[in-house]
Amino acid sequence: MTPLEHTLAKALTEIVIKLDLSDDDDITIKVLEPVATLLQSLPKEDRQALADLINEFAPEETDPARHLTA
Image 1 (cartoon, rainbow, N blue to C red):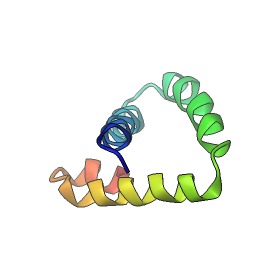
Image 2: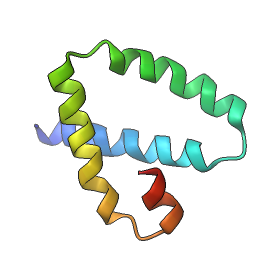
Image 3: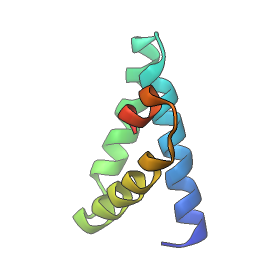
């Protein structure tokens, strides 16, 4: 992946973690549903590459709640 793709995947991971840990489920759903739809339209190989990148970020999390979400 390019540096841009890596940075965007990291940014997406940060957004998802913060939304997942928020108390506002309505906002979380409103934000994540369209994102999930966009990601589902990617080819399987690209979705897997994104998942692999996100899995690389998980061990970097030192906060247990953030680590579990990642």
